Length: 142
Image 1 (cartoon, rainbow, N blue to C red):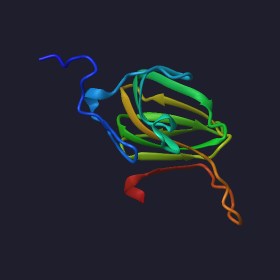
Image 2 (image 1 turned 90 degrees about the vertical axis):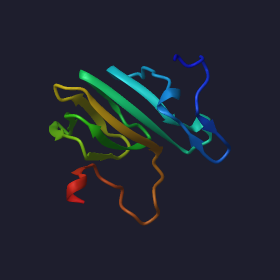
Image 3 (image 1 turned 135 degrees about the vertical axis):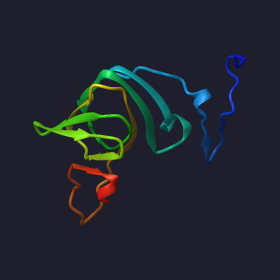
Image 4 (image 1 turned 45 degrees about the vertical axis):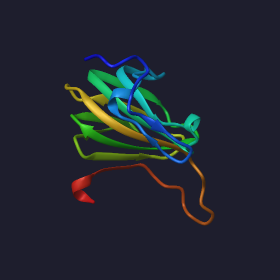
């Protein structure tokens, strides 16, 4: 049975949102090629950060700069790679990447479809703390 357009089990309240896959709205975002982007959380919903679910086709990619934002990306599925400071890092399911503000980045799928969960938030400097650096890791090593 096909769902009635606009009818989902999503719930959006003042302090929380519950989004189900049936309510995702696929989008295309600037800088992302051969990618389906689903915005799960955004400032338009009252949050102070964004959460994106990105599905890259087997030759999908993203190029850009983090600007004033910091990013955390987690690979949910598939092989991918990220180019940072002219060095390519291989990513696989369970890999994670922290990107500080002002960072040039290129992400590519690794020959098969890849799925990433990305958190984006404006960087706020902490007085007395050094600015964080780029981090590429895997959950099994943490």
